[in-house]
Length: 437
Ligand code: PMP
Image (cartoon, rainbow, N blue to C red):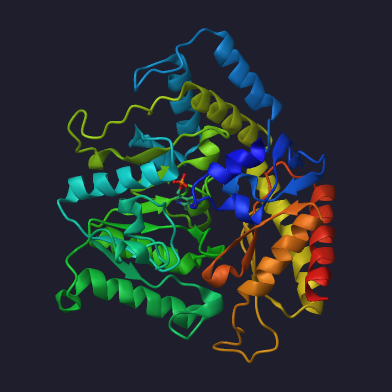
């Protein structure tokens, strides 16, 4: 019967093709399939499940909300659950940012939040162009596809879908300027400066710059801190709102509650989704009050008041803050990175191991081919796909990302223990041996 459902499902389905399991149970970092096999889930709802599957706090918050008789559908009307959620989120934000911030509840997905952020920036500035970065991922709606930093999903639509301008992202391992390190950062910043300040660049002043502090789908690529400082300084100097997309990085995943805290910068507009709904659909935009130019009702939507998602989100925020799961993610991430670097020492096909906290990417390269630039060998998407299959055989669910799908991504729930991290590394090592045999 389940297979019948799959046969009916759209050709656009993606995860079931690479992870062909029928899931029946989820607990913590584990998933069980209909054959009874247990898997470690390092995909975790594409980075959504900060507390893992069915965390007791989340389940209790959902039960309490259901038992309370609260109306479950409330448009964007006020409820005690919503009031508590806003208080909990603002208590978690850096105080200087929270002081003058406003919150907009958006539709249920991350893309809904990005759509709202782009619309807000355009309304506030009266400008049109949105600047995005190569490798960036902000969703699959028409508006967000405009700043998709990868042509694949845009090509069937005839290219871009909106007024956007793409710039190179400071991807150090494959530096787009062929320089790498500090020189690469300088080159990237001078391109942004030229775009924003030089009329000869031919680009009108943009309405916003949208950036991920660590690109997720783009292959777990962290932006250097000095580049982020420069981006913040330049956007502020030229009056261009900086939108930071923390849909995937937010709520402790990178070892800080918000990834922008690594660089000590603040956004003008912050977009959150995934973990903020505690495994249920929710997205919000938090922004400087000075940008709150919208007329009442200027941004509406029927599903902006998911009570269960807000209750689950509040429970998640409480647990993350009470147990300092951001610090735990930093420690567990360092442990896993240490294991992966040890494996890399014996296996040159692990070209690069990178990422802060529990957002880790391993770029798979073809060790038989000569290096391209800066010592990086060509990406090997085929080996990465074979490795993903072997990991599944070992009971380890992982997803790929980046150009050619050659980056293996580790996004385990933040509650993962040290012993479980060691187990993940062991399974990965075994799978790698099998993939190379
Ligand atoms: N921004 C980022 C950084 C993301 O990783 C994603 C989803 N992977 C999105 C936006 C879009 O979120 P959704 O799939 O919920 O629309």
